[in-house]
Length: 609
Image (cartoon, rainbow, N blue to C red; front, side, top):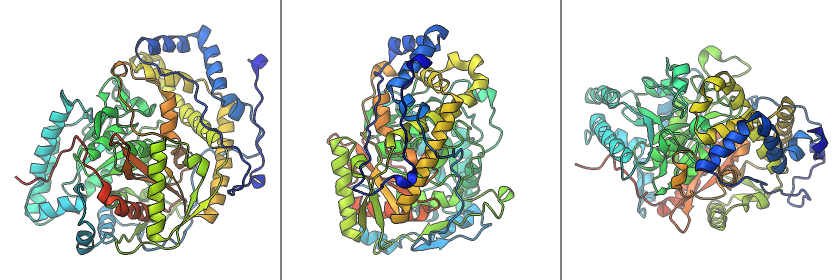
């Protein structure tokens, strides 16, 4: 294809790029050139892509039209490649935190997290004008401890709710697999512990769902496919699941996800589309779609997901819940499908910031047998309070990027940020984040190459068993060259340097979480999946740096569009500063408490008899 070679961008050295508000750097909007396709169209398109005659030419044209050749393949840049976004631990002297000693058990870390929560009297004083609130982990714990209800009763209600929601007319598509017998066994054991006055922790008896990308016995791990569990049997819990189980949590099943995590809608042709509890005709987002939806619908106060390209934060925002993606390597990745090993990270979906904190405390920290003096990191937990918060926070905001979303998202997030600044006296610093679109494409190339490499050993045997949208994605992923992969890692290093300079001036970067709210599920997508890269690009627009650069990020609900669909605001932080992000998310949640609305599909698990 040398005859058609396009000219590439020549990137300026990082040191010569102005990151201030007066920068002359051009903001390039996403240049997605791909029509929405479902049904027979996506099947025909797949046939062309997979054909040896037409596929190579078609893929070359697609890459060129979407600026991959210009911004990556033929680009010139001086940075060396950065293959893994790992970070040496740096103590940023976070405000109002409790530092955890090394070697603590998950139960001990959870107990310390409880001590960081606002007092009951503070909470009561601050929740006088609230029309809707979700049951929290502490609500469950207090109900169990007072014998107002038992884990067994909650488990029975959960099973009935999942059964109802999985059938017509709802067909919510929350779960791929759940086992009533195993759920009741765990609940009975937890009930007995409470009867003896010996709960393991506040997580004892708490229903927790797990994305079907994470190993959790007794379930197979399908990755949203119909075949993967046959090739890779699940023989043990993932590390994050083990830690929750040690705390007494009830692991209630494996949630639905976009097949192999290759899409953002959560429409799975094998297990059904996960539907949004705020409007069952809308997507829940992906790829951790089921985990976001079960929390939103009240079935669980928390769930686990995996975030490879916003896959926790996007569905959390679309479903009106909290989504926390920690720093790369903060939560061990063992027992998680190796679909994208340098960008994918275990994340938390929770109904409240407080519950995200408790779960974060339970699953964080190195595996003792694998840690060394060079990898040892300190875990800080934020001391949350309604009456005061951390001081002198500086929020970096890139206006052109922040505003590159729907009008309703922009207005809502701008208003929320203004309220946050007014209430706490925090300052916004106007900055420029260069090459945002190049970073999106470099991340896409990276996550695609890693997924394609992992899939290669299964391709010949199982490609025909994939959904049509997943087949298209994997065909595109397989078209990236080693040269392009290395160029993408050079861009990763370049962006890491830009972000380090921004974080030298600001504590966090603030943005909307998604560029649009949840869009409609079309009937023609249910059997084949859909290709909708335009909406996909809008959904991932603000998520990329968290994964590509391995930095922590959190989303919290701040309002709704005119259809009543949730909108999220995102904070992106320095490596290892999850405590600061949780502080900011809690501050934002406190301001928005009176605005929160009940989803149309909601199950009250602690309702009175």
